[in-house]
Image (cartoon, rainbow, N blue to C red; front, side):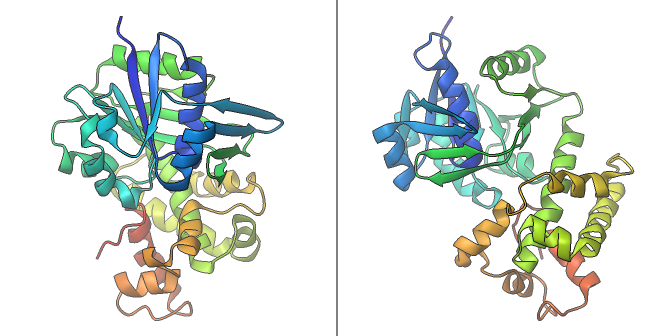
Length: 314
């Protein structure tokens, strides 16, 4: 049986952890070859020293079969995990075409509800499985990923795809000591994850505060934002649980008090991607001038930003 070929694009907090765990398990085996697609100083560090994963008191060192910023050096793979940010998706998929063959399964681990549709806009007919993860992790320096949450979970699947192939990947991930699941209700799982991320990303970015700070200072707005998004789900016929609003907030309460969302971190690090949230809203929502604007109007507008994973929707 030929080796499976698995690529991870975006070796940051998510891709670094999941790609690293899979590489650590299958490095040097006859089961699979693992490839990392990275760039810049992160790629340089991985090439020179491998990838280091800090898991509490335990540290794992691993290396892929190849780490590169040129997908053509890898060629077509069996499974491609996309772990970049959703607002980079279209550019990333274009760059990844050399690793995408007719039988490649693409599994995006991105936040957003329209990820599969956006991939199919570029690659009509390509097999895409939906995916999401629950994990607290970060890239602390080039080549070093820290997992700070006690637990992690990865969900993936496609109700119309070959079940045996999905089972094959499930076993592979579980054998890499990952909490992997292939649920029949993957669409609902995606919505639940999106619900938690969307509301938290919106409110932390808007106030430029950590999760702990917005829970302490703006819990009423957090709840209001949750009900706004739940109304969208209801309108789309998504059977979210009755307690979804408070369950999403409770899930954030168990995170370290000084943690924040990746979208908030991106706004802080990369002002060209929207800078502060006020400017982002003014760009997408004429009439919104500043943070003192009508909150109900703001919530509706910013929901439309979050529903797309950070892209601006007029």
